[in-house]
Length: 120
Image 1 (cartoon, rainbow, N blue to C red):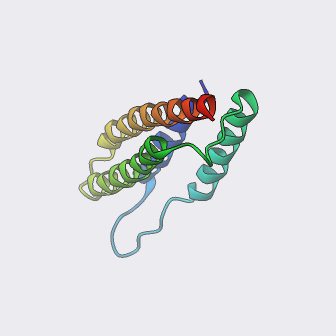
Image 2: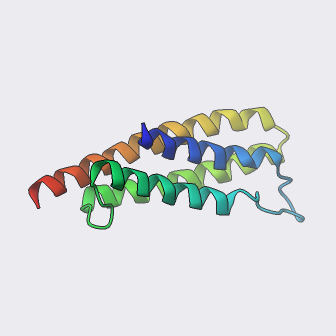
């Protein structure tokens, strides 16, 4: 359940582009700092509930986390492009994609970290 929280935060961050005005006077959404704080809270809750530490999680988990960052940045950029063309409604599609991608890759990272914990 907590892993879906990562997906929800990613979807929220990507959907924040719908309220921006890309172009010369672009100002990034104000939710960036709050998103990061929520991610740290979720990481803390996962550690408290399961004992899995993400510091020593292994190569597969590291690659999954890198995929989350790259995927969310790409979807954020795509969303900005959609908004610049006036397609605000289409940001809902990229937000759903961010949720699905992040939840799946967070599960991959968690599973890898849990396996490494069992071995170590």
